[in-house]
Amino acid sequence: MSIGSYLNSYVKTSADESKKNKRKAKLPLVVATWNVKFATSKAWDILINGGSALDAVEQGCRVEEANEKGQSVGKGGLPDRDGQVTLDACIMNAEGNAGSVVYLKNITHAVSVARKVMEDTPHVMLAGKGAEEFALTKGFKKEKLLTDASKKSWEKWTKTSEYKPIINIENHDTIGMLAIDQQGDICGACTTSGLAYKMNGRVGDSPIIGAGLFVDNEVGGAVATGLGEEVVKSVGSFLIVELMRQGKTPQQACEEAIKRIVQKPNSDYKNFQVGYIAINKLGEIGAYSIHQWFSVTKFQNGRNHTTQSDYFNKNY
Ligand code: SD4
Image (cartoon, rainbow, N blue to C red):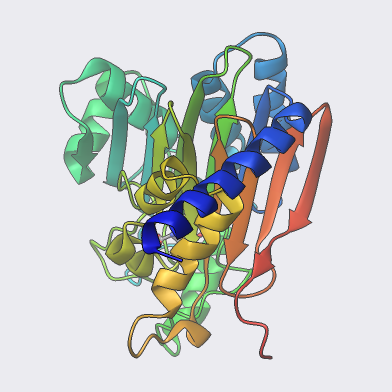
């Protein structure tokens, strides 16, 4: 079979699958990384009452940012190796606009600051002090983000000061959220305190458009969690959306993006985790990770539930 006819038959199969699923897919829907049922529930309330996908993903992410028990997002996030909590977040709307903040200190709701950057500035990304000052002019309150629990964990860590980018379920719950509203518009957001005990100044994938998040309202959206350096180097979320544009289902596209990482020469993938979720315009959902225990929460057809994703490394 020539490459051309192989590709044609492949695209046809994916399109057929999509057609089959179209009957099943019901809008609106919201899907998020990890077990975040309160967050998806907040987003669903907005969607089911006719609200926009943009409001849904922002408000959904804010639930986790305010949750002090979550040690990877917003207030209560684990600090960098110097004991400072620094946040990264971004948001994309259905018109392809984007806003992002990196290395933001002292402000809990980084995702909302990102939205303000998108809506009220001519820029896409603000960093550090500039992002904080901008947030203050927009009425955000200065808050202490380092909770006693996170301070204690950091103090314990300083005894060894060993930075291991081995990501496991405890330090690995960046929230990435994708939603489709009743109009069929797709938006996404991502927010994190980044990897625990990172170097001062380190920025991950989560606020980088195309890496941690990408949305194209004609096609779909994707969002990442895990070792940000690997996601940035493979421009993972943009890759997934482009693969869906070429005919892959969200599941096939997530699997291909994970393969791009693990199949690199000398990939150290056995020692890190990356997980992706994706949706397409039809409301089909995909999720895939390198290792087991990556979970996905979706609220669709009135049902809010968390499932484990399929994963690459079955050789334990
Ligand atoms: C980062 N992707 O900063 C994030 C890490 C993560 O919960 O998923 N943390 O690299």
